[in-house]
Image 1: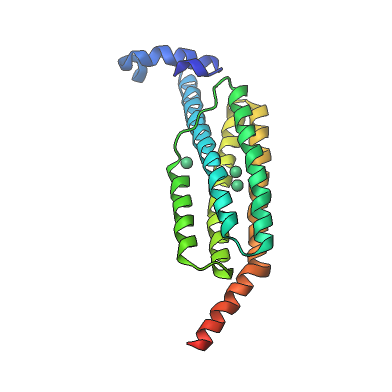
Image 2: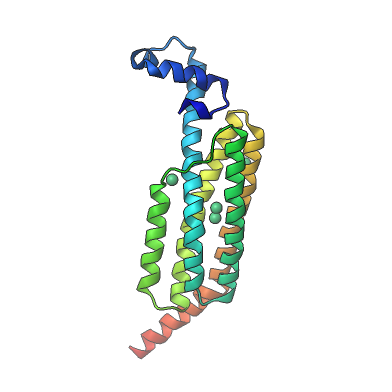
Length: 204
Ligand code: FE
Ligand code: FE
Ligand code: ZN
Ligand code: FE
């Protein structure tokens, strides 16, 4: 566990934590303790989003297959390509901090994907299912926006600017995807979904 970090402090922390008693009541300066704590939190967040992005590489194609709207399909297709690049950026980030790329199961993304699959199966293929896909996809984007915003801030605090820049690039892509999804909802999908619902109400 202590083999994979570049930060000098981590080596010291590793030694301390072997002795659990002194780990808590360490004489190390307070600032150093705080910084090495942030190291650990940063690594945990990085592993989490790495797992989440890789899960999305499998989940987005399923969403694409369920779309009826061509513009929604194109947007998700484009974001799938971006996601592949984002996974590579994360691998580069791991590399820059001297860690091997390793994911840790993200329970939140697992839940978001499960909900997306459930909702898709509850509505027939067409404008309503498309609206459901947009809703699910935007929940995913918002989770990612929060994660990359946090990672970017942590990387800056830790003084690893190159890594922060990688997260910032991805953050902009996630925000772009979110905006495009909103636009498709407002300009086409929800309009059709609304008129379909209206028709059903008249028939009833
Ligand atoms: Fe992503
Ligand atoms: Fe997570
Ligand atoms: Zn940033
Ligand atoms: Fe995304």
